[in-house]
Amino acid sequence: MSATASIAAPLASSETPEAMIARLGRAGRLAQRTLAGLDAPAKAAALHAAAAALRRAEPEILAANARDVAAGQANGLTAALLDRLRLDAGRLAGIAAAVDQVADLPDPVGAVIDANALPSGLAVSRVRVPIGLIGIVYESRPNVTADAAALCLRSGNAVLLRGGSEAVHSNRAIHAALVEGIVAAGVPAEAVQLLPTQDRAAVGAMLTAAGLIDMIVPRGGKSLVARVQADARVPVLAHLDGINHTYIHAAADPEMAVAIAHNAKLRRTGICGSMETLLLDAAFPGSLSVVARLLDDGCELRGDARAQALDPRIRPATAEDWDTEYLDAILSVAVVDGLDAALAHIAAHSSAHTDAIVTADPAVAERFLDEVDSAIVMVNASTQFADGGEFGLGAEIGIATGRLHARGPVALEGLTTYKWLVRGTGQVRS
Image 1 (cartoon, one colour):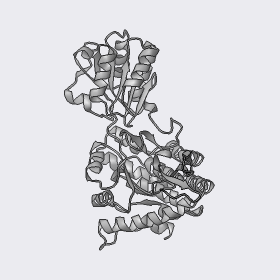
Image 2 (cartoon, one colour):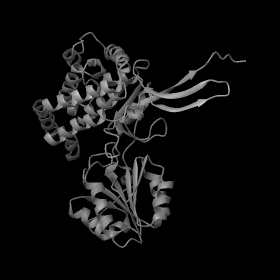
Image 3 (cartoon, helix red, strand yellow):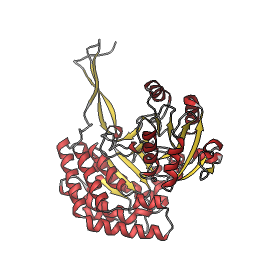
Image 4 (cartoon, rainbow, N blue to C red):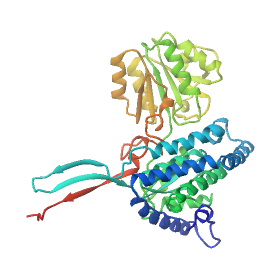
């Protein structure tokens, strides 16, 4: 199939969503067999070619994105969602650079996890291998199209992408450039496929395509992840809401506390690493400065009674606020009596994504690291660093908050599994 055909193959009038997913799934699995035979330099070359194609296609991609942004504004998308959706030359350059960065990362495929010589004389080892065909279901962030494609291809997986309708034109333009690049480098176009329809029934068909799709990764809001987890008959690698906390301990440096809290909330409010709850120790002397900086810069604060006493601009919080991912310039604030109270609040309300403490007390910091059971736990740093790129992983497929297979930023290693290799010299078992 040509690159153009792969990009734009329409849903035939007589083709059901299930038949379409079966067709694309078979094509993806066949392409994955080709990927599995490519060495690390060949996969890297394909990704560098894809990054170059993204740069060449800047005018087309930005024009497509402008259509999506205009439609989003007309449809009343929030400022945070529009920020996720919007591309400019700088952001597109960053997307291309991330593809290049993934190309230059060490290839996990074939890496030996461990090896042992057994008393029987057998030599046993575990080596990393691709998962197979991965389905990505995501919402209004067009960068995911490139990130997911790059990570899957580099780790030897084929990918089937289904982006949200808000970014449909951006996703198609980015996908077209990616396919142009990888095909020129000798990789089948079907290694990176984008669903040619926004029909929700196609998502349902993806979720039940056991035997064709090996893993589903949802990237989006609570309703999307909940639907995927409820309906999937395929293994799911997912994250819950980013209900992230920053606890300002009594021994925190006041200037550091102001800077970290402000950045954690307001740098970009619409990303999953954004702080959604601020916990202020009752013994911390700089609480007023922390909340005043946030309020002065346009953040709505919703607090408990003690937080409200700090500044009359703080609105009362409801029980729902402590369990809400705002993805907007809104923040819940509570005053707590020491580390134990902060840990209890986090245990009750955190989504196990990212939680942070600001403190100058090393013992308190270590206890926080030990006792907070989240995928990412930070000391004296903004939760906005919760990102695979910032962790040196290149791009990421998402932040996994579960406890199986992969946790935290999921990049190349998280997109592999392993197999056992057993080498004998004629042994038979008694």
